[in-house]
Length: 142
Length: 200
Length: 174
Image 1: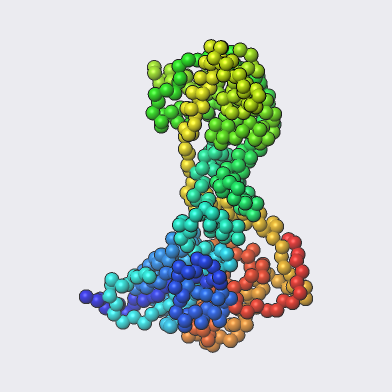
Image 2 (image 1 turned 135 degrees about the vertical axis):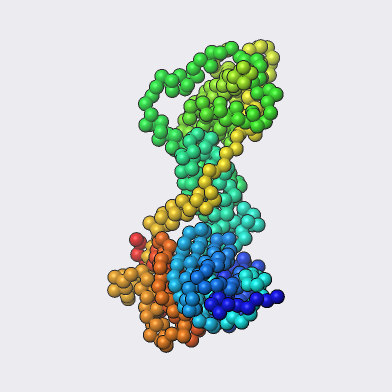
């Protein structure tokens, strides 16, 4: 039975994306959806953007959720209420970045940085309009 | 922060190739795979955990810097082992210069009392279970001087020839031979003592 | 037994004796009880040591052990890395390494309409040695926070899709 989302719950989508040009590792991964790829192309120099991890979460107000995007990268999201979130980006167990943001769907917040071999990592976050959700799907991954 | 891709499935050859192109994550994977071996070699020569850590890490840094020179004539871990051995030998030379000459050191160099011991018949390691044997060998190695331990490690465990050891240690082949002889006699004596200790 | 013979027997056992010298050693050992005992002892020790080195492992975690190596590599590469400076834009040398990002951020921010976008209210902290540059793309509906190592930002290798034409450049060693 699906549970109703409480009004204050924040439903969030998080994607770990890898930006690369020619690199043999890329054949293992699927390209991201064209609309998001377009947005990244407009801003960044990489030719290709790949979906590495995709997660959703429903976070009650004043609570946090840890989204493990990879072995090296965890995003901790705290729902501050009023579409405001605190984002804590943890890389290799160390804090890389912490900030407070307002997430209004359908806009994306993207954290990014250089990766090895002239590639880049991105973590895209956006709030999703929540109606009702199945709790089994409240945290999912590709 | 770098994203973790599954490099654990790649061979050393692939990882080295990637690292030679600047892929530091690939290099980190190689370090993770072989760090124990490189550290163990440094520890066997220095017998000091902190020194072994420092020297093994320094070896990896040098390995990264010299990656372009690695042509694949030997395995990568053999190449790295040579680097850490050279660093250890440099460190030992530095320490020797700082150490005052002592009668004991001179005696060790010339062979001390073990040179004049009658040849010992019973094999002090016969019948030992492997783990216990390794432990005793380790304890005995710890009691050798650094120079004698170095020459024994390089010959017995790294299987280097006399000429190669002489080059690395910056001494003559004759010196290598006499140090090796002394180290072996001392080891046999130490292992015999350990056998007697355990029998009591 | 004299020292020369002892070392000769050892070299023979180790396969280091030149062929000419090695001939006849067998007879020498057979005829000398002390020599044959010495060879037996040396052989026994060789066999005992072979493959019986006690294994030790690095006492640090993978990450901790690597972190020191990585820092040292980066430190040493910084001391060698050339810095490309546009010849025509000599005055840029006076700006911070993030001048490129900052100017882009300014350009983008001028185009921003009042917020329908995720806004950043506050950056609480960024990891040691990192800098965060935030810029909004109204038309893309995206806010980007780019986390950079300031040392990396000195290079011309920027993440942006289009870079200004820097014209001729000269290489300046740090």
